Image (cartoon, rainbow, N blue to C red; front, top):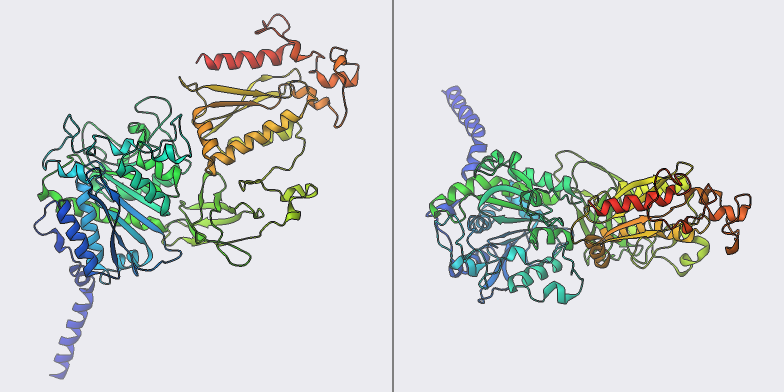
Length: 621
């Protein structure tokens, strides 16, 4: 009898243990899916306040501004210990309904807020996410548009009422754009003339150092990643890659691969997206979009998710949309913890604000916060990382390996040493830094091989804004290299002006040659360090830099040897005048013919012909 009882309890115990995972899943609270409906503005305020009141240590509701009609742009912040600051905790945001009639994302964000709060402390994945991430959820950036939209309408009306804000402005065309020829760092450009919803979002993005963001839309089913715009003037079909293209593709896949309808790519015919993702500009060009603004003007990586073919489907479909998107939404949020993170401090342990975290080979630095924090999203691989800041000495890069299937960001802290006044003495130029915090190249002469290596290094390091080409060869068969510096290099674009600097036409006049090398380096580094003036110049101008038109003459020249102007036309037997000339002893400056024939002066005018013919042909493309 005793044995029978023991066997019974043993079998019961094994059964309970075997069913434990199922029992945990059964406790997952999704009661908010009962009686599905869209929550209008007034009820939204009550819902968010109810969640805040029920979970005072986890949730806080606030507004970032008001719509045209005075409706609050509401946000619910969700994190463990929501009322205190948590240094080192990264910030994430979902923004929905910037087009008022694209409503699925709006309701999913409300569901997500309820899901996180109801299941905190019960479901391990949710608990970890809320404990380790500062989460911000905005159900609607366009509450005015939502209020006049009609449930069941799958397309925007011809008047665009509902899609646009109360002034009939498309909010996703209202942000500062990287290709805007009038782009400026002045507040008048950033804010004046923009919609109140846009201004509120810009200020929020700039004041809060978000790491990752999802922008929820409707009307298609796809994950669309930066860049959203191009400078060709064409509406579509030109892929415009961001420096972090690999990271953005990975993030898009994180969502699309987990959403079976999206992954198919053909849910909304005739559109067809490979594996459910697309480069935004390749799909169609969006000038003034929020996605690109996040990436270019802040530390935030944002991806756009289109969630339904029908923009405003019936409410009865909302539970199905939640089940399709719950796991992708959570998985995307978890990517806030990929890559590296850390603090940048000085020798006393004080935070270094505004330091640049630079990844070698990826021309997009991120900045530290007021607390010296940083987060840098990276895909698996090996990287060289450095931190630089104005007033501090340059450090050697640190090598970091990002593993596959990373679940936590790698901690990488930096301690920077402040410069002393002696560090700026000319006798030790290797320690010099300019006022922007960019390293200054030691002033030296670059012979032909060193010059070529210098230019190739720039072209390899900044492939998105540079192109190195040879426009011909000198008499002694040295390439005449031109470095093109511009956004999307390699083609002439109507309306985009072109500029050139030509140096070292006289081989022994070398200052211009070295200045162009430094200028090229400065343009590239400043562009990706956030210098608005340089970004505007490179985005709107096609710049061509020819450091040496006479590399043969340079190679014959001697340091510190003066030449006399009246000896320019003497024969090459004179060592001084030879420095002025190319290998044939011809003064290139006096070769005034616009285009020389191949039959006449084929040797004596070869550099002159190379420069003029190539640049002339490029303008005729």
